[in-house]
Image 1: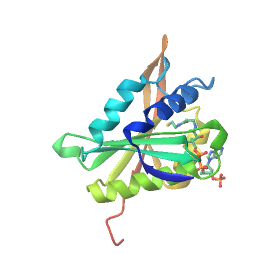
Image 2: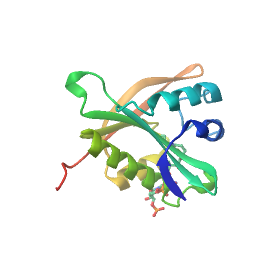
Image 3: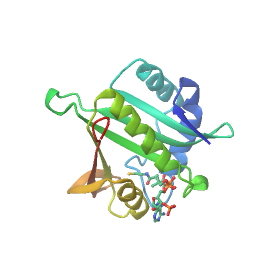
Image 4: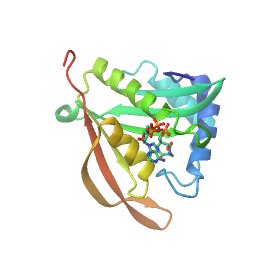
Length: 169
Ligand SMILES: CC(C)(COP(=O)(O)OP(=O)(O)OC[C@H]1O[C@@H](n2cnc3c(N)ncnc32)[C@H](O)[C@@H]1OP(=O)(O)O)[C@@H](O)C(=O)NCCC(=O)NCCS
């Protein structure tokens, strides 16, 4: 299993992963109507290759994309030290350290980019993800009521954050 930056050629694999995880009945992701199509995914991956403020990392096992982490920093001058992330691992590959490895890649990217704080939203019923984030060192910072629309419902989300120590600490 390797963790690396995503390339445009990963678009198909990333769509398949996003569709599969998004279709799990527990409803882990905010997306409910399928991942964006391969053309849009490839366009996005191409666009961010030289863009310093966002990155996508993949976990690849024997040529198959089994994990994805995307990270993008805030654009407001007062919060450029903050970056938001999203994460998923294929059901077949969970509890093998892949989520943790992807988070470590995000922290390395953040260090290099001068980002000091990572944040994310997670649904309150997603105890696996909350356990992973807390195990990694994220803390719960808030509770967002009716923050996401899923189908006909508005659902709550937990806001979590991780502070990045300055280099050498
Ligand atoms: C949440 C998710 C990314 C975790 O990825 P993962 O690769 O399985 O995580 P890791 O193997 O690195 O887990 C590290 C630690 O997190 C905790 N953890 C992870 N999954 C857990 C679970 N199902 N139950 C309890 N603890 C869990 C454990 O402490 C684990 O260490 P251990 O396996 O040594 O006990 C994965 O379950 C997933 O993709 N779920 C569906 C999509 C999703 O929920 N994405 C996050 C949206 S905010």
